Length: 123
Figure (cartoon, rainbow, N blue to C red):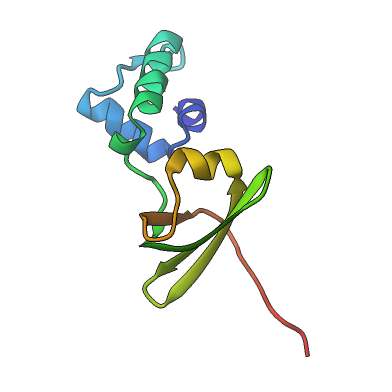
C-alpha cells in the first residue's frame, strides 16, 4: 500500500480509503497484507493523470488564493499567489506554469508539503 501511494503521489491513508470504497481493488499477499495488483495500479494512475481536477489532495496545508504576478523566462517561472494575508511564491518550470494557465487574476491553490520550513534573517 505504501508503494502504491508513493507511485500515485498520495498518502497511504488515501490509498486505504480508495481500497475501502472500492475505487482501488486489493488482494491479500502471502503475509496477509493488503496489496494492489500492478495492472490495477496502472489503470488508476492513468485515470488520475487524465483527470487531475478529480483527484483529492492529501496535503493538509492548502492556501486558496489569486495569482498576482507571473514572471517567466526561457525555462522557469516565478508565480506569486495572494492567499488571504499570505503571499506565497512558487518557482516552477515555465512549462508547468503554461500548462496550468497561470496568469494574473487566475484562482489557484498553493499546496505546502514539507516537514519543516524555516526562514530567518540574522542581524
